Length: 136
Image 1 (cartoon, rainbow, N blue to C red):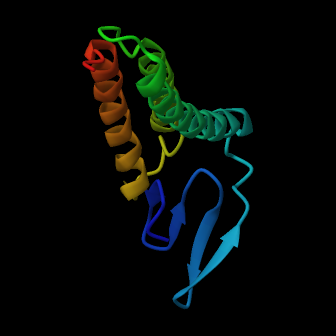
Image 2 (spheres, helix red, strand yellow):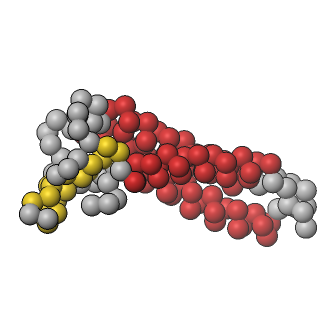
């Protein structure tokens, strides 16, 4: 329940399922029919793509450590990290704009805040990759 993007007193929601609290137990349910499925799928796909591109960026960085000539920049690593950054931004922006807009009671959860934090950190990481040069 603590990994949710949206909380209320009796429910938590993330991008994969909804948890309704009944007698202290979490009952996983489908999303309500009012959820726009196209936007939900866009948020899910963007989140998965962000993870994939971040991992690819790490592998490309390790490969470039051994293959780059001295003085060159880690451009390909930076590109993968920038794409991951954009995917996180797309997912969090869509979720912010579309979901829970008309709900009066509730608050964003830890995972939502972590998504925006990962956007900022992946952007900083991509900038560092673009500036970084191989020394030896």
